[in-house]
Length: 362
Image (cartoon, helix red, strand yellow):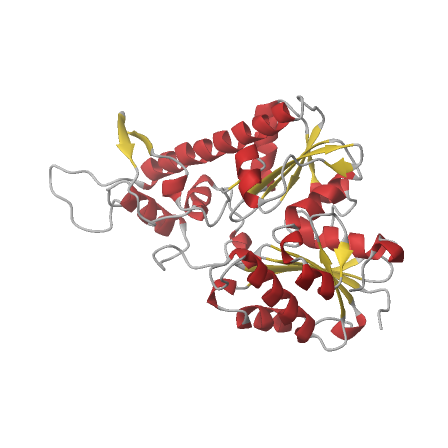
């Protein structure tokens, strides 16, 4: 039996995010948990159990609304199999609970529809949060997460994507595989300026975007839930060491050097991080311009969401557009995690407001 409590879930390949809403509309918990779904569906089951450990309400009496990107992980043979496995796992996790699944048609559906048309539910979380933002403003929605960036035009109280599938969205510039934590640095730029000369980056997974944004001072450590590329310390020194390795150097003070060689200082490597941060900003800004041009140059404000909301604001400045925080836009400014976990809040809001005749119980 649903009691007016609603929980929105965003089920990713590396994280599980949820937003629990009480009958008055207040956000009780908005959180993110590690969920290495690529290791198997049991990881999702474990994370779901951990999520509800201190809920003030029994999960079976909550209406659960979910969206996902976790179907992409290589634990599943294909997207359809991933959707089916995720739906089955969630439906089994809380006995008697009602679940609804957000589709690329912008509606919530029951498990029967999800099983009958699984690709309708694959990688739809970006549309949930963009649609939520569109109810409040026109402009551009930019959500920069740990792994990817979503860019969607907002107009006439609706999200107006040019494409819906991941492949088509990549071509349209609406999906950019850059994020502030998990992106390998070798994917961000081919090379950097080093002592006045071009230095190519090694094509090895030595460091990630968490390292560069740790050195620039932008990273919220709470967003970096996974071990570093080398399993080492997640400190400025550890990040500098990893970035130095990427350009064929050593960090000064961490081992012997020949008299004719100079090791890279921490300040040197902060400068490298700044170059790489600029490269990522440029890449996302170019994609945003592509999206705007395809929409006929739609103007308005940029809604900034995700763990990289601050980078989205910098992109807005490059575009010459004002920026607004997603949490501020939806009147959740004081809710910790609201802007970082926008899809979870969005599907919870949709579940709480969508008319019964528009929800397919399936």
